[in-house]
Length: 99
Image (cartoon, rainbow, N blue to C red; front, side, top):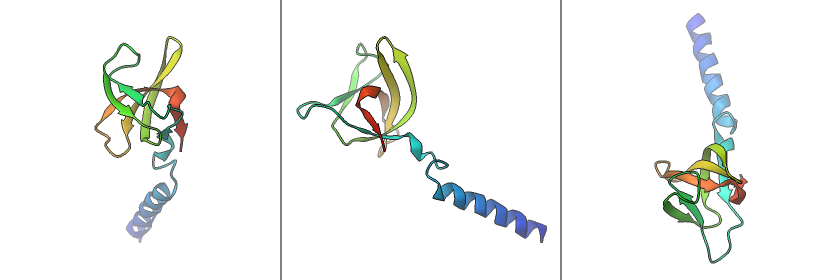
């Protein structure tokens, strides 16, 4: 009986985590916005314009933000592509909108 209650409690916690986006880590999802139509947001190898550009991201690109830091007058966020989490870099916070 005790094992059954314990298992039911574990299953309940797992279902709650899946049903609650914040518990599942979804609150870190952002979308690129505000980039000029003929331009792209540059994903860079480090937090600053002096770092190599890895990829250009058009408006609407979905990202996951893992951390942010202030460098000079710009807030830079470490991100990964939502659809390709292995592709990581830094983008300016000014062009991100939380989903």
